[in-house]
Length: 377
Image (cartoon, rainbow, N blue to C red; front, top):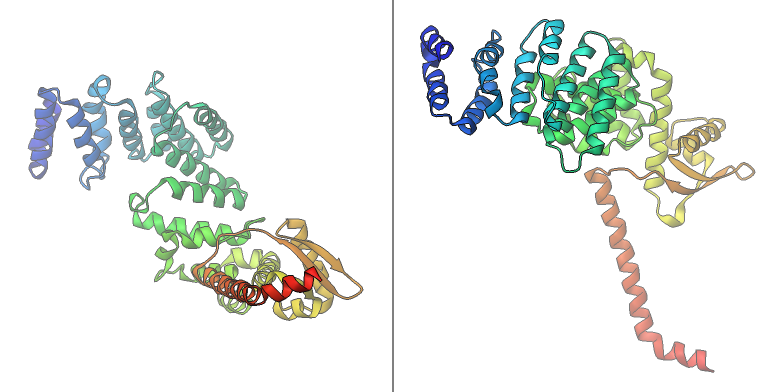
């Protein structure tokens, strides 16, 4: 084809790639063309100067009828992402029709929604996302993971600008569930890790950090300017008030989000300290005195009841407060994903329980005749 030949002459170092595409096209090896284009979509040469967009417009578009529909839609999205003008990219995507294929149509709608977000049209973006959600829910089979990945990417981008932080956090975790970390550019990994960690800290009704801590995305913060966020996240998960205070004092002047949410964060870390305090108790020691809670949660005794009421209203604990004896009987603690250290604690308690059961069994075995004789008389 003329375009491929001209590009091969213009870029001698890339001649082999263009020639290979031309040969495959002449032989009508459409599957192989699709595989080659997938490689080129992430090639450094085609990632610069909108070269993949040009390749799409002058070559890939001519192969539309012969390529896998979802693959073609992915190429269209990659081409649109190279357009620096969001308005132009939006028009480009809207001009591509894939009505006969549910998944490729859904992917294109998601990409249009992302462009609407970039153009600060959140209402239009959200309407498109709701359309796609309906399609996903009604799909009879299992959709390609790329659909879910892009759907949650569009969702997290929407909630990042519109809030609330809790929905940004939720959709970020879902995005990471469907997206291998290696498929995210390194600079974007760091940005996402910082944003999702911050959302976990300032998000209301988020009192479970284990799932995020277990994801490798958190590790990318180490050694960066955002390393303090990882430290703070670990402190919240463990209810470590002292570490929280240290990091908070160091960063509050340079991080406006911390100073803005100071009151909320102080309350949240104390609720986490209360949860961790309960977790460390065995089932027979769930009656906590107010003075114990005050000491663990760095509060005055008269502030404990207010903390308990807040934790109960959030649903993270359930129990009965005894104001007369200044104590609380805990009946329920919100389940959460445990860290390695917390699992080690569980293992230790299970070992103790197993030993007690074995001792009881041994006692019954040794004394069964006497016990039965006494019962018969």
